[in-house]
Image (cartoon, rainbow over all chains, first blue to last red; front, side, top):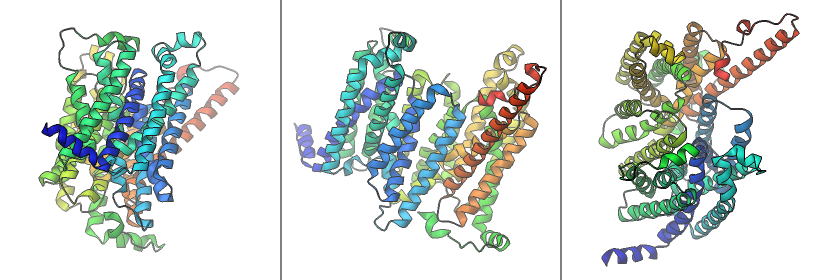
Length: 287
Length: 316
């Protein structure tokens, strides 16, 4: 009784309502795209996007633009760039790592530029881009986030069947006449859009966890791709709301930590021994 | 930003007086000393990281340093101890879990989750320690302020120990890195060597993090060594060359950061990445020239004689 009344009271606060709405939509989008990201073994792309999201957001702030313009331009641009470069020239991990380390260094430059030149600068802008500020979303920002996340979800679901085919067996899919390359690029653009949205919720450093943890857990729990896709979205949603509730109940705990903690605990639970054995192997062998 | 108020000295276009002025501050002298120690150690360990293609493990260890450092500040001890405790512990964990240091397959989802969770833990420690938010940027992106004599001595001792250990296992480690299966067949303890190396990597990461911050460790650990390996395929040349590049990059970065309001991490990554790109361009130009020369010759040469062949591994 008392818990439900506390929950209803929490939803009376506009900031919490916005966080629940925007966070929920973002979590479902991240769960859906994250599943394909894990299936296609492109988690490293998520890592790369977390670096560029930071630099893009702070470059936009330093130039005096809306933060979201920089976020979307940087993440979608880099995702497409990685997709184009990925096939043709297999860049080695030293080059990629060096480039992203430098991009992050550039982000620090923009951060300092922003805090020293803009008189209206928010001194904690860097921290909130890195670690998210979901409790600070305004009503319009929350509704924009919901809208964009729904578009991403709809696009991923529309692409789900051909994308699944192309991810599991690219050669056969290409032989059947599927535009494998185009599918890969469209998917990466969706991942970029999702990363840009997720940065506002959990921050650029933690979005990798939101993409990887629910998807990894779902893949360990079921063989069926569609069930795993749905499970990944549901897990992400549950973890997001659990994290938000924790952040609300314990004010000293930042909501991003609550979300990551819930995601990690759920993922950790899937490693407990189960009587039915490790059926997940079959899916992995196919992928 | 701590850097902005403390160190924006004017640049007088007279290098000698500028350097004299800069070195009249004990904290700058300590920063240069620490930078040299860290750069040499990081380049030596990083040389093996590039050779063994363990950059993903290096990245993970670097990320682990952040909760270590912020947790140490929360508890009330120097951030350096937190870096060492967490990086060494993580190195042992990675060594125990097979495949954890690789960046592909299902393990990458696991590694990504663990990384994000550890960063979130770091953020939690920061949030619990109130009034510390400005210092987050220093922990993540590096700072050269407030390095004491004692810290430099500690860094030097740790670097000496790690370098001595690296020298002791250097020959078998090189053998095991270049050809694991042959080394194992010859009786080299490949797995034990790998564990020892990861612990050394953890120590080097913890040291380098103190100047570059947790997120930019790559700049000192991997980039100078990768640049040196592009320039020369011979270990005798490329190992010292990597150390030289590392020291040059960190000293230039410190000087630039002293004379401008921008943080040291930005300069160190930019200079390191710049030299790396130049080395790559030089390599591809040389490969193109030598292949054109080889094509122009009437008599085809055997593959082993081609100058680019031994170094081709890094670009493959």
